[in-house]
Length: 378
Ligand code: GUN
Image (cartoon, rainbow, N blue to C red; front, side):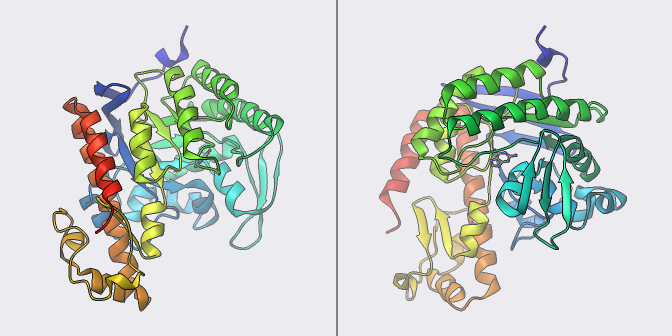
């Protein structure tokens, strides 16, 4: 029997166009339209933005991180204060990453054993242990609508033996995560994470193993970790067809607008990335005509806005010369404006993608969007 049939499905596929899909994912805190881009609010805050702007920009769901929140202010404290939605005031759907990936990228002195990851906190150096069971417990305490299994992600390039060991460990952790999640109330979801690096056979084994365990949705992890885009896309092509059609698919930590467009074309429904807010803080805007670096002196006397046709007020109204000045002067407002402009552009892209798939014109949308990016900012 297919274990996926035992689990309630909260995802409704509304339309497809080639391999691209559009749908609705219903969570305890609201509906997510897919394909969806989830802005990253790592430590319970969207850097440089009010939640109301995140919502107004069109985001249905945001991402938080187990690793950061368990260290500060602690999952138990957030639970006592009513959960992450109430604590932050976001009050909408929230997905939390499991912690394994952040331990790898942020903490010192980590040790991975069969049972758990042990690491030193990047905040105060305290020794902390994170097991698959504790990761699920933390995510349940946070009140996350979608919890992620704990996994081990390997940076590329890597040796096959290392990729295979991490993939097999992640599969065993997937089983333990699922067991730990069994007592969660109806409506809350747990996603498994496919690993396997850049090796098709390992990707197949991982996807098949996860589908045999059965999850509410499936993520593809271990990508955008140092490999060329062509390798990432090839791994999506190897993996997506093995995942159940009726379940949501999430490509973790991706990416540029171009990565997203290419992944949607290959059947991905959900994305997250720090890029729009991080690049915004560094003076870079994402627009219909590609990325614009506002630090560049060519903007110093330019009265034009970034995009006079944008539906987002600051992209339509603020002079490039003003954004350039704010960025050069190190004003907080520069980072704030560029963060909201970028999140609004990503959401504009996702809305365009959803409409195009629903109307059976994804190919045309894909070609036109790429032509606009290629035209560049003139
Ligand atoms: N974020 C980006 N990539 C990954 C991954 O492979 N695993 C997890 N847990 N989070 C990620």
